[in-house]
View 1 (cartoon, rainbow, N blue to C red):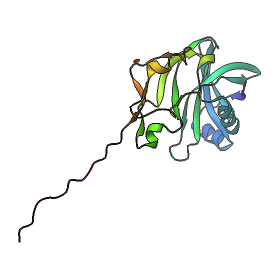
View 2 (cartoon, rainbow, N blue to C red; view 1 turned 90 degrees about the vertical axis):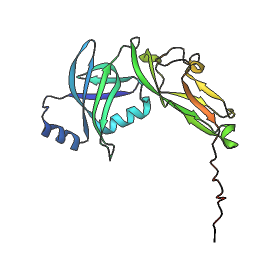
View 3 (cartoon, helix red, strand yellow; view 1 turned 90 degrees about the horizontal axis):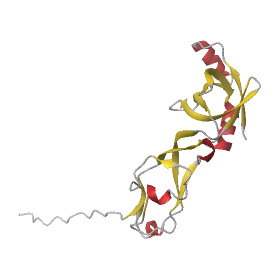
Length: 195
């Protein structure tokens, strides 16, 4: 399991936050059902490395004051231009406790339908799911390589493969459809110009 070392923050004023960020650390909080909310700091480089390893919904071992807690990334704020992380929220989890999460949908391949002029229209880029922390997928992958024009994947179609998750969507909600591209032809101007 990926481990992240954290230190408790005592000084919570704005100047302390600026100083913290300048030194390469990120202010954060950790909370959960059996932990008081704590203000902490983590090293930016370590956070990015761990997140790359576990993914958006992965479980992280947060080492705080010599005690390890299983946590998940719940939320984060970043700057709009540079995308630097400004603040992170961690939720303490029990591997068997069900939690709500958003899971990204990734399309794999180029469909047969696209090769003959169609287009893959992805209508859902994220799915709202409930699952045990240990069962949450980092993402849901749909291989569209063999899809012809008119083929679609709905929420019901992926339920069996991700049976450990409860989807908060209607079964008939489309995730992706391989559709025709409508070609708009310009009408020829048939009006005659009188001399």
